Length: 258
Ligand code: ARG
Image (cartoon, rainbow, N blue to C red; front, side, top):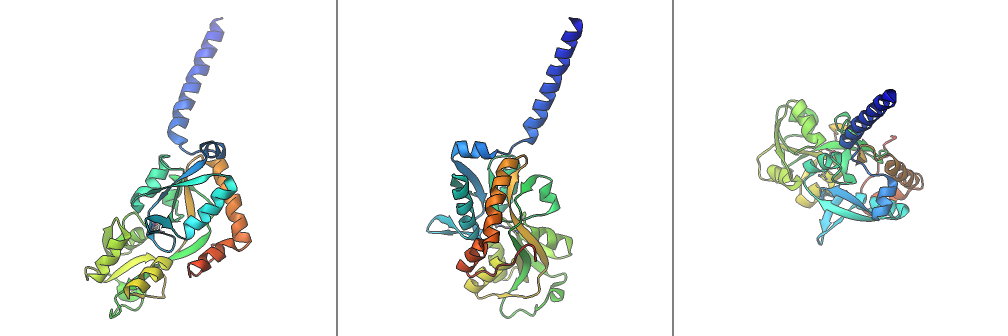
């Protein structure tokens, strides 16, 4: 009897500890959870054309189109929540959102806190300058001042490589820092650079600073959801749908396998 008591006490403690541990680690939802809710809650920073931007108050773009197709495959709708980019990954990490969709680059630092879908695109960081700028290549930019968006890989890269960095929570403010003469260059993801430079009469230098794969970010322990998501994404990569979506936005598609 005493033995049984001891065993029960031990079993209870183990359960409690396991519960407490999984309570802080498992923020993600399963495919079943999502389907029961009927919707995926998406965190996004819609200041990043052509991937996500506002048009008549709606969030549209390449990643929204991709997501709509995945949602259709999973039989759910999308609930899109807008925020600054530096709130996206932290919000996903604590399970406030089911996934983050924001031209998010996979990197080691983020992989510690969130899980990623498979990559679907290979981006790079580009240097954007005023049309009359003497800066024509990466070497010309050495030790110069740059603007970046807070919490991005551009910020990390520029901080680690000796540039004088001005960071802004909104992407448009990073762009405005260049056009108003506060910095020598703006460092931003290449397709976004092309899209916004064209609108603002700016020059995008052809030499890339980095290469980085984009993917969708999920809270840890979203395994069955990520599996279903990846199945849908793989099919779209294989049958040319992803490339077609890029074409619709006049964006050059580069496979992450390249
Ligand atoms: N790819 C970069 C990163 O992951 C920039 C993403 C910024 N996204 C945005 N929607 N503003 O850090």
